Image (tube, rainbow, N blue to C red; front, side, top):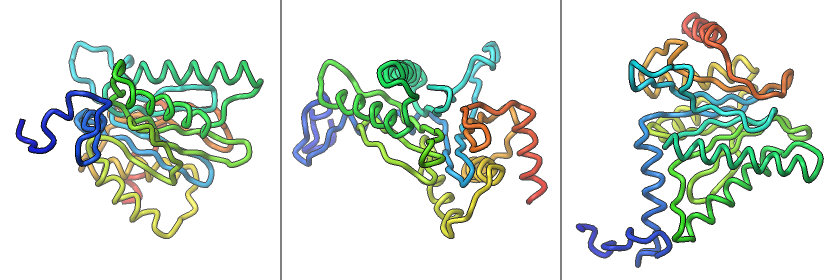
Length: 246
């Protein structure tokens, strides 16, 4: 091992290195960026959007079965970036937590409470040797009755926070830089603008002109506060509009 003072400290998840780092947790973040996918989430005035790439790795696969965008409750959805098997496991757990909350308290779980619950579970996995952290980042969107559109991100370390816009995956930093530039003046984004900002961010940082089948878009809006994914035709309309703007 050529890490000098770090030698051996990545063998065990619950042990700090002399520099105060938990290497296994850092490797979980590496797993997210090594997945090769990038996802973007944007919160506008009228709603929230998540966009991610859709890559079909094999000609023989059925493309309709490949997705990284999941509905957790009727009003909350998420995009998962990282190891897809871990993502499915975390989505199942999040759905279970949301269902238990609904049963216990009689109303749908708010987005921030679900984000907090998922982050708390992630944090437990960083302190128990029996479990490894999930190699996924979860970006949640939902519509809050009091606070309006909500956008949260949970990471494998158990950190969660609300965002105006965020990104995860291979080109996370480039996406964040692009979003910061675009949102510097705090523009009032309509639903159309929000969707198009998310798509153009992904398109710009990856330097790719997307076909409608190459991205997935999940939205929650003020008009329809149920989470839904856009159809190929709807995505195509937005792509057309972006081309016309340019």
